[in-house]
Image (cartoon, rainbow, N blue to C red):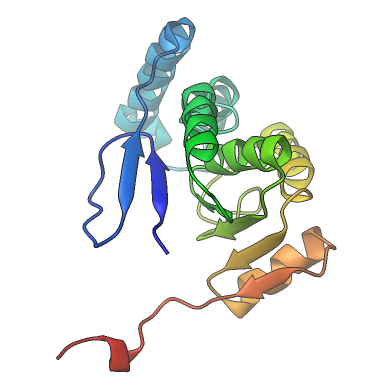
Length: 193
């Protein structure tokens, strides 16, 4: 098999039989909000008042940042990625779509391509989406994220994650019965020593 990868920008993908396509952030109408979110992020990171994630100013600035970057800072990648994905699918024989997050926009792109072309879709989670314990969201943003996650992931043919505890949490949210744990690691028989 020969995977084809769509990514927002050039990454560190070195491997045999991997075809990589990159998209440019071409939607200029998001430039203002992107610049604004950069300023908010900069304010949050530089403010000594925000070293404490429990502080009111941090929570206000973080909520504002989350709102203008909903569902994630890569949201302006959605349209070019769907366009490129459609072109790739129409020119190649694609058997499965695999999306992995972060960012969650990858799952939105995969859902759109899955629905448009009726190709099986596997949604992979390195970390959780709405219940990610590494990221603070206020209650409003968390509710928006949860609604979008359920609406999006309900269409997946299968859901994978990296551990049994994350699998159990995903199963409690997504009642499809198609959640699988594939732990990180390698098979020593496949690694030349």
